[in-house]
Image: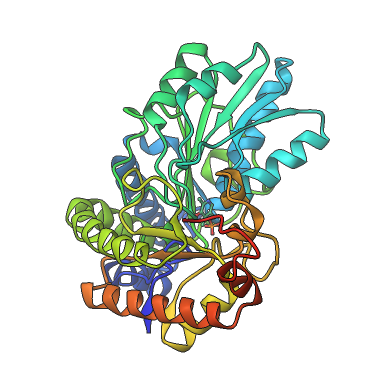
Length: 395
Ligand SMILES: *Cc1c(COP(=O)(O)O)cnc(C)c1O
């Protein structure tokens, strides 16, 4: 199988697995226990916290461990909302193409009387800092803009957006789940107050993530119970997963440049190869995108059929995000960048990792070309497009 769905999840690295094993086996103590065996686990926990902080450009005490990216997004937004409400500030700014962990949390807050402005995303998949500046009001308590989009891979001008927020004194959160471990991220330099990440997107284990929050940012706990994580997240810490995450992150950051160079070359070969298919379009800016992300729409076909036939040929890909596959609604991300419904339905996301090779890329190009023409040969929509009864939308 050629695995080309690394935005959905990644293989765990050997160093992550090796870092976890001792904490599942001999070193199973509870970090809250006072005896030496528990304190050994506590030391490992605090060491992992410091190493993760060093990778993110923040302080160890600014790290809160969560069950993943979704929980971190929820906690960041609900914390800012709680703080805003106390000051009578109930306006939040975000974008139309965020992950559902953000969008659904904002929906919930709207029902509680918050006003939410979702910024339009330009056709190239980028949000401009000026859009954020113009949307900020007296009562804005939070701006939340994702670092890199999980479907189309576009990388946002986070540093500039952060600078706008800092100047206006508004809290800034970024969902950096697709960015961390793939492109350089530094909370200090990027003017970010709160940042979410998830280990399984950079070769770490599933079910573990981080909410990093600058000192002075008040967090509310979503889980009531013990005093773990300075009272910000109750429950016995998942030490094996935390150790695996720290090892995976260090490895990803250490190899970031080398991996990115390899991926940029494969990504651009793939983009060139697929662009040769008639009546298709690349989604998202061609250069301001994640090193491994390729996302296309093909006119006259259904993304779901394309995926199934690619699967038959041993290529694991996606039509968008894993969360929306299985539903018949087109991707909210593709609609946000202005793709019409019928075009958005024919989408394909290929997300490479450094495990992939240029041979994989050639195999994928051939498979996609053949499957697209096969599906078109059977499509009534394609026939009427070819007969001129209907106009092509894509060139
Ligand atoms: C995967 C992902 C999430 C959710 O992370 P989980 O750890 O799976 O909960 C949130 N945001 C983005 C951008 C993602 O890609």
